Image (cartoon, rainbow, N blue to C red; front, side, top):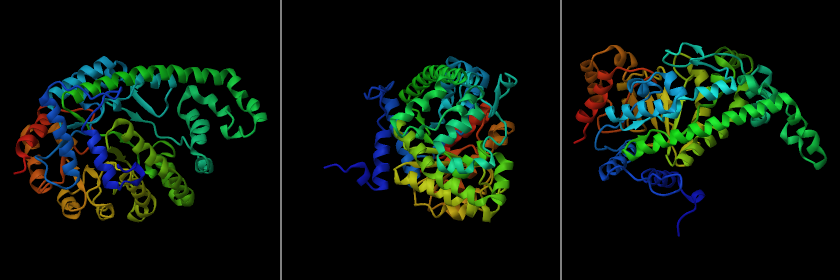
Length: 450
């Protein structure tokens, strides 16, 4: 008799997720038809290669992951504006890149975002190509701000969904400002209160906001269907999506798009208890978000970009208090659900490495940006899988030979005996054809384990 999901160990759940990942399905549940037997074999090999490297085994060779938002489309012949507003251009440029460069794993083209949806909702967190910045721009520009006020902490802690609906969303989406007039849905606790509770839905500005949401929803449905078609075509060719779900560290939930850099730094001194309570409230939300995406996509990998935990942002004492315990709780929660956290460590993590040894062995992937990679291997080599560190500056301004030399050193030192994934160290919006080819092609040739 097969075990129920809740009866499985974390490893049993992970094995089940990997087995599911290796057998991709169509939306109707039928097996994905691969382009050829060779493509099917390559897909399975790439999934197994990922599993081997996570489990600190020697795969057949060093696997290759590209950390990029717009770079694949850029090298495939399209600007960010093109792919944000024209999914046909997104598809053609992304497919061209994958066909030409052939990395093992890629970041979903959905990460490019949809400019039409942003326009409809009057999104205020960003400038993007064609909106606030030139159509020729090569990436986003975040607009720092206090989209959550200090006095909002109790509301976030008490009821996060209500806070997001009636406070946060009206601030970050211009057309949704009327939603702040809604009554809390929890007010409908008796039949006599149903009528009064829905009165705000009869107010014309609220109705206009709902119409805008419906219009955005129509656009989103058309967009995600096209994204799904791209993903299906890539899988049929034997390529593997590098992540099924995504989430963040609880501190980054607060610091990135709620309180902003200045706000969260002041909060650590002025209202530390509120920060800690808010993060405690966010932990289960972060776990559910990441694991839910992994389940829906039939892909065990959960991507976590780490934005504020680097050496240069906070002290070690602050990291011990405000960042690591809550991040660790999210990671353990994901691991217990059979997921593989894949963390992108922006900046330097040289002073944080010992903390990472507290995680279950062979349970996660950490892509490093500017960390000392020999030290990373020495400290973590027998505990977790590491990757990354090919500098963006080298890819953008160096030569192919310089990139090959850099990758050779990473393979020789960090990739020795397995447990390493080749990747660029910074999420990239641009690239240079010869150096990106050098990183990928050299690794495939040189990074073979005997």
